[in-house]
Length: 134
Image 1 (spheres, helix red, strand yellow):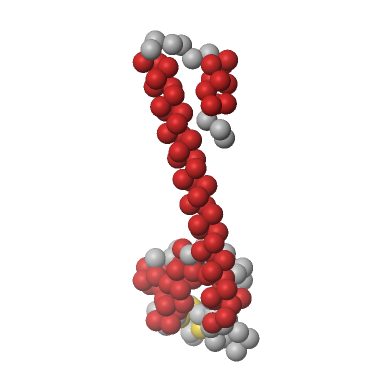
Image 2: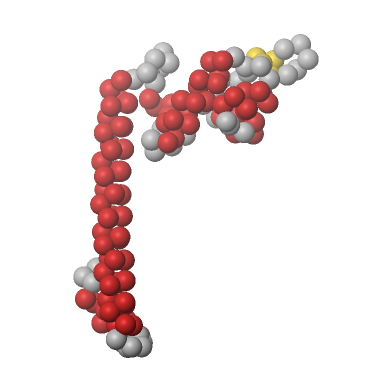
């Protein structure tokens, strides 16, 4: 298949496919006699794997490190990196939960003040922020 078909089947832009080839993340398509690159279904699967790895938080630079020099998957490296990604995700979840709680507290405080007809000036905002314990 040509690069356009590969792009369509994999959901990856042709320019991205060329970039992946240029950095060695995807083997270059074999050029046929008319100069067009030809790809196989294996290329589609490789692109899907790259997109999947990215969805888990792997950078393009990290993806090649998940394979051994003989191109087999490095199971130990994968488990170690996935464990690290999970810890990073959990830390982000905690940060977002805290942020959500702070926003909720601020909404409650502002709603209470405004429902009492109080105009919120800079001084009052600073008092409210101090109450939030951020």
